[in-house]
Image (cartoon, rainbow, N blue to C red):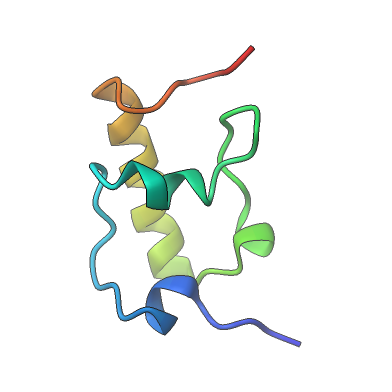
Length: 67
């Protein structure tokens, strides 16, 4: 059973790095990005998601690692 992409389902065209609550859904408790199979998002959205998480980390909106 294939789940539909979260972003397509909710009609989100662009993943914004400032939307931290949304990005936290796709990060595990150790602040690492979840893989494509775990998140079940399409390839295009996964690329946007990874870029947004990296930008949020660089801007100090999200941690690189947690203890």
